[in-house]
Image 1 (cartoon, rainbow, N blue to C red):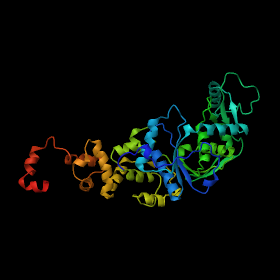
Image 2 (tube, helix red, strand yellow; image 1 turned 90 degrees about the vertical axis):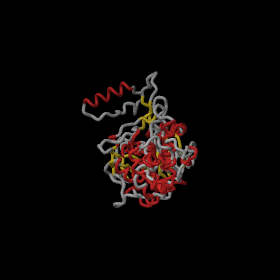
Image 3 (tube, rainbow, N blue to C red; image 1 turned 180 degrees about the horizontal axis):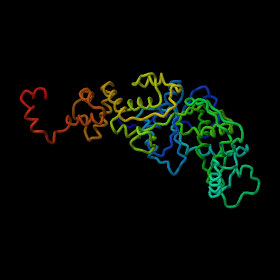
Image 4 (cartoon, rainbow, N blue to C red; image 1 turned 120 degrees about the vertical axis):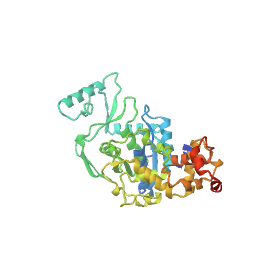
Length: 417
């Protein structure tokens, strides 16, 4: 549709995991993926590509695609960002099968998991102050050692100092290695000695990202975690947390980052790369999805894909390891191909939205399919198509008198009418 769907029209189905077990055997044979954005800004093109790949993988394997809003960062999360994410997903028609779930509503589950880890001796309270931690990091840097928590409170036996609210740290294994076969990057191994005891609960008791995401993925029976490669460093820590909670880790696939044409990484908060900014600039959702699927994935030399073809052909094995480069010119070219080839009625729905943005009532002029047929060859975006169509709905404020004398002759009256 050309308009933005409201959140109430979202096709997702929300279930309750508030009291779910840590493992749900019913779903183990079904592929279950998730898109889990943090509502700290718009749905940007990198996030949209991650959502698309999770959607396609689930659809191809007749699995379940879940939307989860990771809104535990109270200072940075806001309702406007949640709305932007949901509206962007709706415009792209990336319908989830479950959700949206909100981490902010699952505090009891995280507290339960933390209590379990403490009771099992797999987590401990750390009373080190920020000043102490920073002083030790400075000493480590001066000695040429990688700054990390030194485990000072790991086996502490003396009474805790008064007046200090502790954080809770995960007791990471000291020996051995974490290995996984990444769906994009191949085999990866990280020595446990390289990982410190990460904080899983802050001094106020609120859980941290690495804890919440693991609990959520266990409760929601996620089988495949497909996300950006900026999370690679989190993965070995999370795998250890899965095992500490007596759960089998999911499969992981880390997608290459998206770079701008200048080689710099696209900014998550940059309005020019938000999904809805491309809608406003006159791009079709079909064109943007087609462009996003090709940012890191290919199928031979094919450029244009229907949604059905994307679902039927997408495979993680074909995702490239190297970063992808975003080109506005290539997206515009692709958009024009869709404007020239999609059914007129389908484009007309989107053109209707753009005409209304210009204060034009589409019902007070020619049939929109006819306008699409007239202008589709020369308008690369819907914004330009709407601008070129404006004269069909409004009286001319002025005109070129010389051109009028040259062309508006009696013989022109019939064709014009």
